[in-house]
Amino acid sequence: MDSILGYLAANEARFVDELCAYASIPSVSAQSQHAGDLRSSADWIARRCRSAGLVTVVHETKGNPIVIARTPNHDPKKPTFLVYGHYDVQPAEPFELWTSPPFQPRRVGRDVFARGVSDNKGQHLAHIIATEAWLKSGKTLPCNLTFLIEGEEEVGSTALYEFLPVQAAKLACAAVVISDSGIPSLKHPALTYALRGIAAFEIRLDGPSRDLHSGIYGGSLDNPAMALCQLLGQMRDKKGRINVPGYYDDVVKLSAYERKQMARVPFSETKYRKFLGVPELFGEVGFTPDEQRSARPTFEINGLTSGYQGEGSKTIVPAWASAKVTLRLVPNQSPKKVILAVKRQLQKLCPPTVKLTLKHGHGGEPYLVDPTSSLAQGALRALQKGFGHEPVLLREGGSIPIVSAFKKHLRAETLLLGMALPDDNPHSPNEKFSLDAFAAGMRTSALLWPELAVA
Ligand code: BES
Ligand code: ZN
Image (cartoon, rainbow, N blue to C red; front, side, top):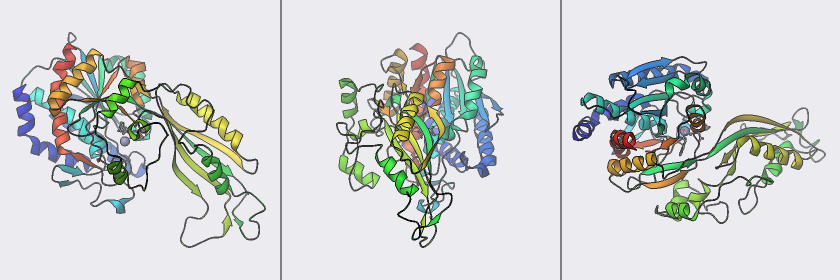
């Protein structure tokens, strides 16, 4: 193992340069003007896999390419593990809040700032580099590895949902490994054993057939923007509970053991509040902020649109109002069932003065895996050695919907070994990745395969 870890330490400067090169490609999957950049990003990571010694194919899809890279000389007697990552990134807007341009990676001490550097380019690059260390040191890996790097994770993984069932036999594996989540600190590496699911939809309320003069007509008809505010306002009570009959029916309760595990991570409410930049925290009564943001479901408004948004004022009753909403779901809530319950409640509460339309968006099941399995124990040993600290067990609030598709089509559970720190700012301005987490992630990955192969 020493020569492999030595290789990682000796070449760190090159790996950081590579991370910066990768993060300089603006592979924003939500914006069609970046289609070419998504292809460049797929080609970049495919080239990097090849130079690591992996046998690599770029698969064309109806959307963005899917990169598959395998360790050479497949040995059927050894287990195979699948490493998943995504090369697409979230939009960088609002640009003016970045202290340096999002696609010109900037190094400050042991951090690199750039969109996508933490979510998720740095995290899967760490695994590819660790595999290179194995292959270049002439040591024989105790398993076969398949890398699957997609380009639509941030927009719902449409192409991968089609690709998976078709390619299931070729992607067969004993377990999936994903580093696309967080750790509480470098001293608290983590095995994440639960993710929230998601259900996205848009609500639209239509009122008058056109924007109307609010002086001439206002007061004699409903205002769709006001109706929308009132409708949305009824969806959550003062105690932070979602006001939808049946919403909590299938929620798996946190066990006393889980709550104790979560409480092992030091937490300061004041620091957290300041970090978020809010005057006071708010959340469902009876749960800690960590529990609220990982093990409880939410009803979140992501965007609101109505009326005149330009300079100055315009006195109108707007013709319509709309809201983009996502629900975060926890084990064992089903997106389909919950969306139906929410729809019924919205229809019931919507006044007859406006017309309600609901448009369904993407969805993803929540995920929960047994953290006491022998594979999970193997992962915990690798984390302990790679980070040099006792790992914690975490539930995380974010979603990686494809994880349940891996379970369905590959019949494989997923080990979630995140490398992102709490201040990495994913999806926010000034995203960054810690080079210490990058290095510890590479070490963990190198140490992981012998642990999993015997588990
Ligand atoms: N890396 C995140 C998911 C994540 C973040 C998991 C933190 C655990 C902890 C991923 O890139 C992401 O942002 N996923 C989306 C999925 C959605 C677009 C379907 C999310 O959670 O919003
Ligand atoms: Zn993301």
